[in-house]
Amino acid sequence: MKLAILSCNPKCYSTRRLREAATERGHRVKVLDTLKFAIDLQKGEPDLYFRQKQLSHYDAILPRIGASITYYGTAVVRQFEQMGVFSANSSAGIVNSRDKLRSLQILSRHHIGIPQTTFVRDKRDVLPAIERVGGAPVIIKLLEGTQGIGVLLAESIKSAEAIIEMLQSQKQNVLIQRFISESRGKDIRAFVVGDQVVAAMRRVAQGQEFRSNVHRGGITERVELDDVYKETAVRAAQIMGLRVAGVDLLEANDGPQVMEVNSSPGLEGIERCTQLDIARSIIDYMAAQVDFPEIDLRQRLTVSRGYGVAELHVPEGSEYVGKSIAESGLRDNDINVLTLHRGTTVIPNPRSQRILEANDRLLCFGKLEFMRDLIPANTRRRRRPKVKDLPHLPVADEVHMDVESSKSPSFEMAAEER
Image 1 (cartoon, one colour):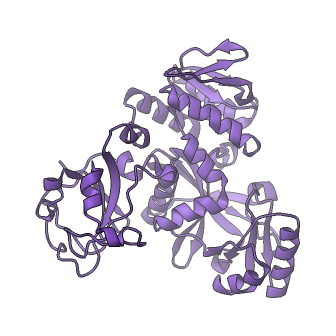
Image 2: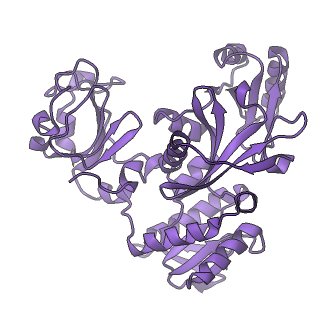
Image 3: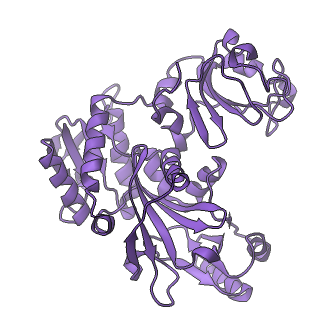
């Protein structure tokens, strides 16, 4: 495998470890400064130049894009994607993860546990928003903060109002978030590679500091996660479109709560804490993906004229509860069920004999004209329109593929059923 590590700092620990791991595994590897690329575009020939010379072919790239160069960095990653080069993290996934509000919106939609959060701009909305997240104490976060910077704890409603008013007067966007008291001063960093958590550590704040970031003086300890925490971390990374990610979780009474999904997680702290070779895990995963690459469905489906992807929901009381997929009539209308989501369980490529249950969600691919016909004209603009030919079965609006989940978790998993 010929690998390019995109990094502006070749001497930092993470970049050095990744380069060493690739070399030890017999791969050819170069560290390329992300800001030294030029993007060339013409019909049918997306191309890249590096230091004024046309870039040679690479099998894969491993982006290490800093927050300060997100726009240009993701443009470079996107160009590699258009050239058919495998990227450990998608450009869309990196963009999603950098916006705290957007990432929480995506995770919320996919039923991932997150601290209750609200985002307001009008001064009159601040107090009701604080009350909705449980009142003081409350966490206030800047959307652009990293490494614990821009995260504040307001012990009273008055102090929360004052902090928010001050930040908004400086044109800062802030999130108001429930304070998870049982997790005060500690969190978990789960390191996800592909569909596995390869390492995890608990970070514990010191003294009166409530932020557990290592950069804030927090100490670390190796931890073995149970299946619920592992599954939450993997799903969060996959939903964001990331194959290599650091997922930060709070240990709440009602289960794991995802705070953030980091697209360029550092290796130094977690490798030293766990004594695990995470860099090698990343390189081995990438080599396997280069040998058997995934298809970018988001782009492939849009060029299949007349076809697309939609999600069908089976509500309580539907006449299709208890019927098989074959009996639903979907396949008769040239609609194929790609995955069946049942709670937090994903069943890829379900058999036609699979019995449908209430609240199942079916990710389907088929002719858009048939899927449109399932929605009566007078209900298509409703938030949850109902189906004409499949009574009581609401269907989502037509989509090709969510940008935030261009690599849906459904397609990351091996087929379990034939």
